[in-house]
Image (tube, rainbow, N blue to C red):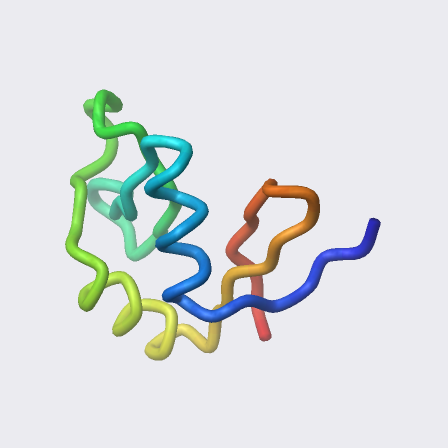
Length: 72
């Protein structure tokens, strides 16, 4: 299967089903999904997540329920 770009709202839907939240890697501008129990990540809200994607020309891609944040 190939990775397909999805909207933030679709990513949020998938993430919520899997118990995931958007996170910011402490001390960097890196973003990733987290279950919220990683001390190296700060959970951020979905608006901030979307802003970070836009700032860095990133998008969420999905294949078979697996999501990855990559350059557009």
